[in-house]
Length: 354
Image 1: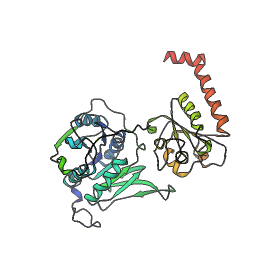
Image 2: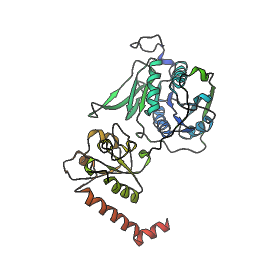
Image 3: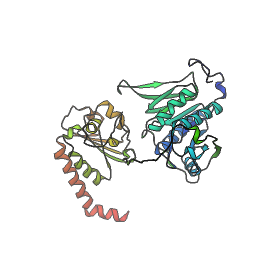
């Protein structure tokens, strides 16, 4: 298959089977995006009639991670074990997974579009002579044609492009973190575990892990309540007010890209096409105009409240409640009313009974 021209379809399409997902891990624990891929993989594997297979590369900690993967819907885990696979490195990961793909021939293979996932996906696609649709926001399958329907924003987010890979296998896609939700785990659920001892040696790998430095980042994708600020706040200090509101609501503060670019808040809080995707129960947009790139990152929110001086701001048409006015007058009043509601005897009694 490696010697075929890119325009050639696979010679034996009937021999391809199973729906594979990459189980990304960090420090011996499955990352959230691995559980997200397992969730959407479970849905699509059921729809296409395929077995859901998780690909896990790790050291001895892989056994515990495999059990977690089973609880989150994986039918079979192919666990490639070696001390050199404890941390992600491009060459060993892409070589091992690429060889597995050429040997086992999966129909589909999806990965999370993290830093590591993006690096890995492109290397694998080249190695096995297939294509990949990157940074997808929607994934589906046509069970009759056995086609993966990968959708992603195009032309600056103005349209959603559906991309098919009809002539090459596996059909590959990477999905943006935060788009898909993990399924509810089934404690004690088990599946088939295949352990492969890798014979790759440290001397075979050009890059060396000298030390691992973990940067603390805020994960805005897991909160049910997100309070996001934009350039309309006018100043960095406005985020202190949003922190206060988020604290009262039990939520987390996020931001639009212009506010991040202005240096008002760290980039790990950015919502949008070039940031993170959130799907909270409540999204409060304060001073955010609603450019299409920002909407792409929060359109899955269940309920949206916008606070903006401009009644014609694009964010308004995506809002369930639109409050027109100055955020510095409205937000403090909201905080005050929330505190009053919390302190009311009726709410205190309800809290005690619960």
